[in-house]
Length: 157
Image 1 (tube, helix red, strand yellow):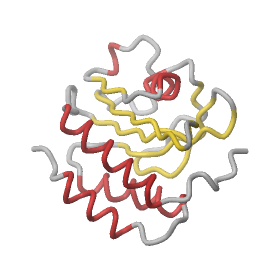
Image 2 (tube, helix red, strand yellow; image 1 turned 45 degrees about the vertical axis):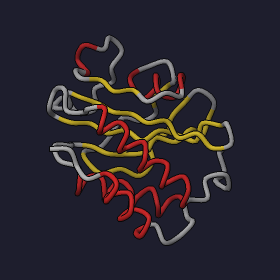
Image 3 (tube, helix red, strand yellow; image 1 turned 180 degrees about the horizontal axis):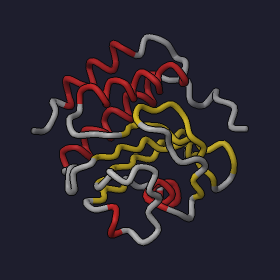
């Protein structure tokens, strides 16, 4: 069952009552983990160094850190600045397996002022879990997160 993403976007708008990116990213992860079914991990990876993603706020098991742009689904999203939707992560040669239970992944890049800020990563233990509707819905939630957060003010070092 696909979540009601327009409703989730309105809920996220109401929840993000500060411009603080750290608070907002933690709240975004918590909302998605609670409201989107069949997930085992939701989190942000931030670009704090060139060609490298650093772990940010997340919900789920301990995660991989750091992730180079040259590896995995998160790296592909960072390199291409395009959403990555993977039905079976075990079929991806350079997949980074933080949780062996993960089977599907959806990663949305977060670009602010033509600069990669980071990515939002969702994992599921169910192969083929993410649909085009999920992709569009999570991209809309990322747009809400960007709109409600002071991402340009985050120190990138």
